[in-house]
Image 1: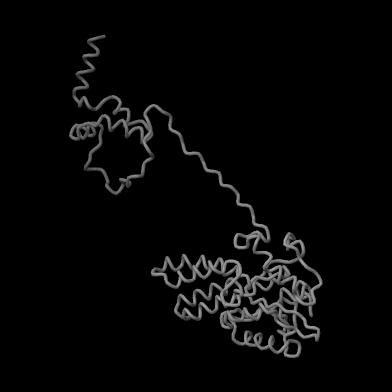
Image 2: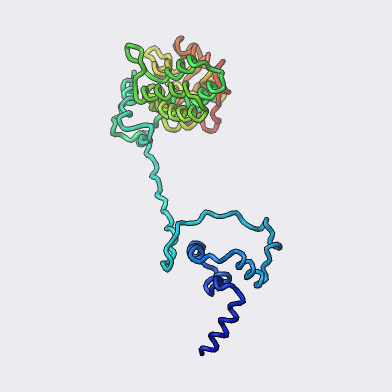
Length: 335
């Protein structure tokens, strides 16, 4: 037995003793990279000896194609030798619950009474809504007079230098009510002003976009711009202007006070409204306390101070007026 061991020792001396049996197995076995690296660190062979051993196994450095050598890959943290390798557990993605009709992040519960108050105080109202009511259960939804798309276009126009800071400030102020001193009031007014100020003073595009995005959140939820109206007319109106009307005892239609103020956003910055086939009526999501419908578009059917701004919008507003598909006209009230 001893003589056989001596014979094996002599054969092994043809190679470096540093090239251990453990290293030899490592050349032919697939092993976890981290574990292999740890062992190699503790038993590094001489470079010259390793090259000689490699040539004995048929590997020649001059024949290696450098293009086939991959870039080093970031390794996982070291693990102790002898311990099993644990793979990272797959992270379960939690499903985000869909928001309820009046539970969107930019419309908190304490904001709802603001636009309910306008709804409940309309002239000739036939019904009222409570803050605890689900709007969709009553056939209503939260609607915007000036669309989010028009708000984003205003910001882009300022970024491109087509609007002065004064014009931009005046337009964004138009979507908020004011107190007796002329200061903006309502949900998010102060935060909108703060982000607007930082956006206008931004030194870099990234900083400007950061505050523009935050400002848009509050601007879109502005107290004056949000109204309650019919769900179906609202979805049909889309990004077009949504004027709200009330009918006077004399039979003429007038824009609501908040709709009139929305025109201060700038006629050229507001998309033209949605019309009936033929363009003789304007689609509104709210007329008195009805769930919207077609209002006559003519100087005889509208009060003078309501027809004029609507006429200006038709002449100077953004884009083209939309037209309801004739097949869908029957879905809306006609006043």
